[in-house]
Image (cartoon, rainbow, N blue to C red; front, side, top):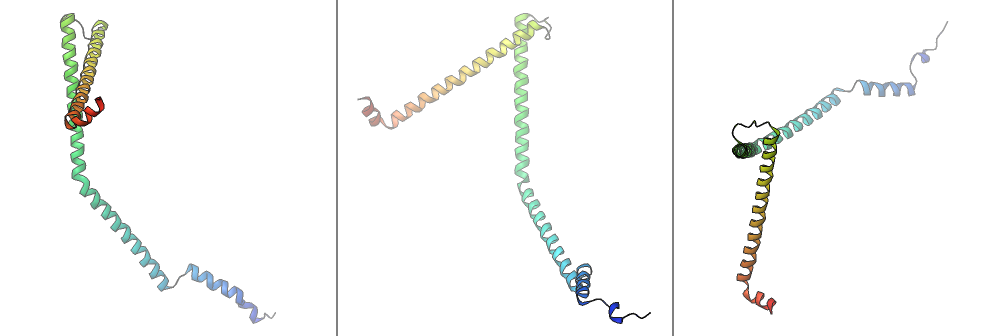
Length: 155
């Protein structure tokens, strides 16, 4: 049996396909180096951006720490004021009902709630009074600054 020697070799189309496949799966050394260089540059840029972000955050850190400490201090002061207010109210309630009353009793709790309500009402009235005084002071200040304009309006 004789075999035609031309059939043992790939045709031109097959040869082009094989070369394209070889280029895709086995790139040249220069192509691999270029790809590696691109990856290294991308990694370096990413690292540089991350370092810059860290540096910016570290520059903000003292202010952030100060803000956090201030918030903690304010929260602590608010809690202390609430504890003192509650202790005052409990002392006042015990004074009204007698010192031998159980603080867990419903009568004591009702009196405590009533005292808290009265205190909130007093604070609200005080704020309204201060606002009214501030408004009156502002109006008096505008009248003293421009007496001619106020006289023109009243006539």
